[in-house]
Structures are given as C-alpha cells and as structure tokens.
Image 1 (cartoon, protein in one colour):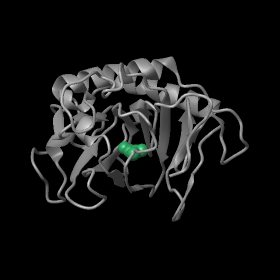
Image 2 (cartoon, protein in one colour; image 1 turned 90 degrees about the vertical axis):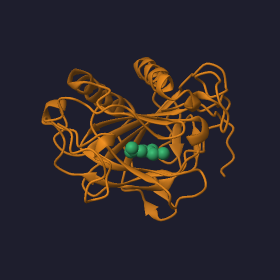
Image 3 (cartoon, helix red, strand yellow; image 1 turned 30 degrees about the horizontal axis):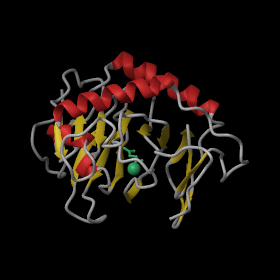
Length: 261
Ligand code: SIN
Ligand code: MN
C-alpha cells in the first residue's frame, strides 16, 4: 500500500504516489500537481514496467550506451542515452556530437505510441497541458497540431545521482513532455516557470508512474534532489537505481538548426 495520505514528517506528499514497490498493490489516484502537470501513479502495471525495462535496455545498447553530459558545473551524475535527437547541453543534434559523432539511434515507434497514450490520458485529467503555453484548450500537441513525439532521453540514476532544477527549453515545440519512471522511487521537485526557486511541490515518483507537463507548466523548473535507494521492486528487473524516460516533441526538422542558447 502507499504511505499515509497527506504530507509526512519528511515533507513529502505521500498522496501523490507513495513509495512504489512490491507492496504498492493499489496505486493512488492521479494528481494535478500544478496547472498542466499531471501525475498518474502506477500508470504501468508490473508487466508493463517489466516490458519497458527490457525495451529500455535494448534501446540503450542500440544507442551505444549511456554517458554523463558535461554541464557548467562538471559532469552530470545522471547518465543519459538519447533516441531520435541527441541532446548535449544545451542543443539537439542528429549526431552524438559530444562523443564520436555517430548518428543518433532512432526514436522507437513503441515509445511514440506509449507517450501518445500518456498524453491523452493525462489531458483527460487536465486539458490545459495540451494547450499552448498559458492558454486553455487546444490540440494534444500543445497548440502545435497533433502530438508527434520524436525524441527520448533515457536517464539512469545510479547511487547518489540527482538532477538539479532546470526547465526543458531546448525544444522548439510547445508540446507536452512525458516522463515515465522505472526502478527506485525518487523525489521529483516540480516548481514554476518563474525560476528555479520556491514555490515547488515535492512528489514521490515510483516505478510505473506517468508524469506529463505541458501548457502552463511546460517551461516549469523541475529536478530530482534524491533517489530513494532500496525501493525498487526486483520483479521489474531493476535491482537498484532508477531509469527515467522523458519523451518530447523537438519541433525540429533536418537539416539541423540549433544555435546554442
Ligand atoms: C528530467 O527532467 O529530464 C528527468 C526527470 C526525472 O528523472 O524524473
Ligand atoms: Mn527535464
């Protein structure tokens, strides 16, 4: 079962996901964390998580493995593999520019289908996530026509890995971002578009959880201050550590554009 409802002594919202694991038989109800930001705990059941974990391993191998991008403060503690478009701070490319320049691995159709389903289900809970930034209504593509995801970043959080507060703003499209989590739970910090500081909401993201942010929350700052070690269900096929897959619509087309910001 999920933990007690409300905010616990550690300040986490247990009603927004609980700690996933073998004991989470009944996922909590979806939560609108901020306008345009929807958390669906336990969106993927055990079979779906196991299948996605297998696929992720194959996609990572096909991408030539994971690497820690170099950012302003040094190497990121999170390791990343890219599909569809290669992201290296702070631009997209069709080639792995910060390694050997090989072509980026393809964006898998299955991930497109899964994220399309995620956006549709999250938009049924808060339609504003599929609206142009700051607006209401609109198509699932965030005011950019139909939702057409074409890039995925697979993040791996090993021991001690975390991700600082940032906004996903290297995409030219306002379409929502879809996040899927596998393995250990984490604290996911979701703030506002105004800056990386407070106010924010700390949510526990567990294995199988879906989080979609778009519309008024598309450019909100977010990060992962902490992974909750020891919470992974080995039945998923991940003994320890956390995968997160974010699926995005780049809004880019070949030939490569992208001045660095
Ligand atoms: C990200 O913002 O790219 C990753 C978020 C997460 O790991 O949940
Ligand atoms: Mn992000």
